[in-house]
Amino acid sequence: MEKKLGKKSYKEMMNQDQAWNGVLADNKDYRRVANKIREENIKNVIFIGCGSSYYISLSAAAVFSGLTGIAGRAVPASELIFFPDSYLTEDSNLVVAISRSGESTEVVKAVTEVNKRSDVCTLAISCYEDSKLVQEGQHVLLASQGKEESVVMTRSFTSLLLGMQLFSALWVDNGEYINKLERLPGLFRNRIDKWEPKVERAVEKNSFEKYQFLGQGNLYGIANEAMLKMKEMALVPSEDFHSLEFRHGPKSTVDNNSLITMYMGQDTYKMEKRLVKEIINYGGRMLIICEQADEELKKMDQQIFELKSGLDQFVLAPLYLVVSQLYAYFTAIKKDINVDNPRNLTQVVEII
Ligand code: F1P
Image (cartoon, rainbow, N blue to C red; front, side, top):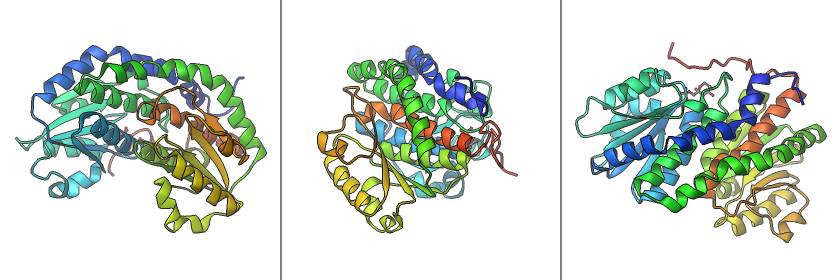
């Protein structure tokens, strides 16, 4: 159905699978770069980005370490500018800089500074091949099909994250994981037409005052990004936490004006299900995104979106995010907000 407001963002959200296919088709380039960097005897990796791209870093670092066994951590690019010695400890010898535009001042500056160090190499990944970051990076990956007109990141986020997951798998030549990644575009295509009207109805039916997002492992980065989408698109208060961290204080804010979205993993499922019960007892409403819900969870009568892919969370992160992108979009539409022209935001954030 033709959308009135936010047409650009809507179109780009709804065709993310095409961008994902574009990344996956670049397998040869990604493999060449992974092989080249691996020769530099990498011991510890710092992933950096700003805003949404920092949240990609959070998710990418978790997948990279899980697949390669090499320590990886994510920090905002600004941290590396101000406190390099806090992060570039003696064995950190690779900085991975993630940026849709490749123009965010902090990321470009951080890479320029790191490049002055002979013992650390830099990898830049961006959607724009002619960007400053791509010129600065000693090694470069592109997610060109993630280019987008919308100010807020949607398909660029999932494409850059998919690119990082592909890079991590190629680092260890994990063909089985890559085959699983190649299923993601089809999984998106087979679900989006069911999910879209279901999200639109959920937004129509309910109104909340606050939105909280919970996830563990690589899904924590997804929880952060969903939090930001609600702020940027729908201009509502939103927060994110590691799922179990929510119990250590933040749960005090739960009431019947709260919508808590939980990205349930497989290994965390049992404990997260107990947390779902706890939150419902406090009067909170939940939106659950999981691989497969068991009967007990279904009986809790909450909004559930099942991925039913047969894959695990360390493959599925880009797909986990889609429902929350749609939720933020429809919440904005309900408030007559045009997400193509978000308040106070620009496509590129350069330091004033
Ligand atoms: C990412 C970013 C987003 C923000 C807005 C402007 O910059 O700052 O986090 O939500 O979309 O761009 P980058 O990925 O281009 O460095």
